[in-house]
Amino acid sequence: MKLEEICQTLTKEIPSEQVYCNEPMSKHTTFKVGGNADIFVKVRSIPELKSVIKVAKKHNIHLTIIGNGSNVLVKDKGIRGIVVKIEIDTIEIEPQEDKMASGEKKEVIVTAGAGVVLARLAQELLKQHITGLEFASGIPGTVGGAIKMNAGAYGKEMQDVVVSTKCLDLKRYDMLVERTNIDDIEITEIVKKADEPEMVELTNAEQEFSYRHSIFSERRYIILETKLKLQYGKEEEIRKQMDELASNRKEKQPNLPSAGSTFKRGEDFITAKLIDECGLKGKQIGGAQVSEKHAGFIVNTGEATAQDILDLIAEVKKTVYQKTGKSIDLEIEVLGE
Figure (cartoon, helix red, strand yellow):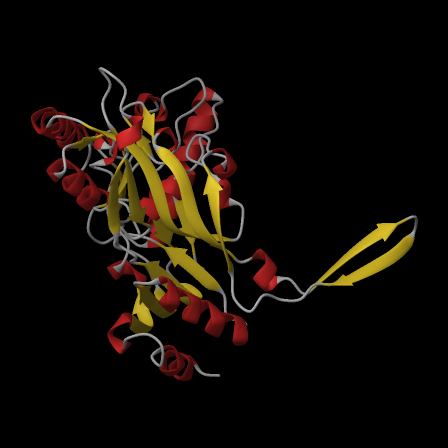
């Protein structure tokens, strides 16, 4: 089936203004680079998401899930198949009256859809005098993306506030046959395919959080929503902390298009400091540059291609290893071809 026909099939279940054929990914990533996605779909509800998954399964089309496009680099030839942007953006607040102990802040459970932008969530929590997520207020991503990479800043991470995450498990939906050998006798078990992906809710421990990593980087899960355990606080204190963090970011981080911090922190070194000491701050290939403001960021000066960025990443990694013997790893995810 042709891409145009698949797009038409999708619009039977999803509003046509949410379905795009041959869509430039440069419009949907903070790096502002990348080739076209064959099909690009914005989903704003679980039924819409299930409809896309069903079509993809029927036509054997690869699915790529993104949030705000703030931690990804899409290659210049784009992404084959269907790219799904999760825009499930509900926010629910549940005060926990029975959790208030004498002299302690009252707990509150906040349930946020995977597509909620962190900056918007932080502002909503500020209005409700809820503290605990200030550290994420300046991260340019969505709740789903933040959970997937266990985003963090200023000494705190998402794992510190997550209670549980609801997601779709595609494993059984994909499963056809399982084979095992017992005493050299092959036993074939036919596993009935699920009619649709199974919805599961994972505890904090089950999400296997570690530095910039979670189970969602390894398993076929699509994040739908997350419950966060926060507390009520004082509006002026919350606002002050958010303002201080915003000012710190503005002072220290570049304002050119980027995907945030490009490289992970080392176990025994600060990566940005190492890159700077290797004389790489300001290093440029094509339109890609190691930020002159913060060496941990690679930025698009205006005319970069994805290949420029990839070439600069390779140059930085090679130079740092040659001069220091340290290997540095990417924090961003590279997609497409």
